[in-house]
Image 1 (cartoon, rainbow, N blue to C red):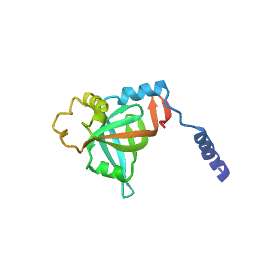
Image 2 (image 1 turned 90 degrees about the vertical axis):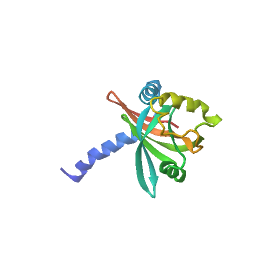
Image 3 (image 1 turned 60 degrees about the horizontal axis):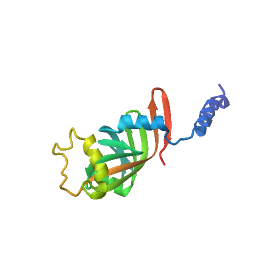
Image 4 (image 1 turned 135 degrees about the vertical axis):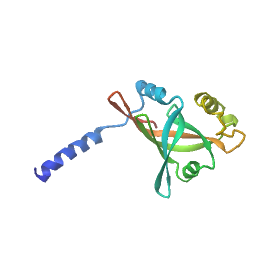
Length: 162
């Protein structure tokens, strides 16, 4: 096989990949995301520290293009997000990128709607002593997704969440 013949397949694949465009989530995609992640879901959350990836599993809850996590404002992940808000997540045949942001103290008035949803989603463990809701550093991390890839029953969904 000549070099030109060897390059034909990669060029063809590249052309196909270049033509694939991310799409806004349709109703079917939204339904899949809600069913999989609109409850207590273990997801991998990746941040960056000193140019190196740092990945950990967290309990997340998905709603309207964002994942929510209860955490501590002084944790390593939150320090890394303060320095570089670009994050990635993965779980249950979904990978995505987005921006992490600290919504502040779990119990502050502005967080009451999402806090109630998190209490319900995380009811099995939320009061097991791991969280100190009297500590104002107990906060809500929101990962606002910008893009993602979702697989379901042989279908690949490339999603533009912006």
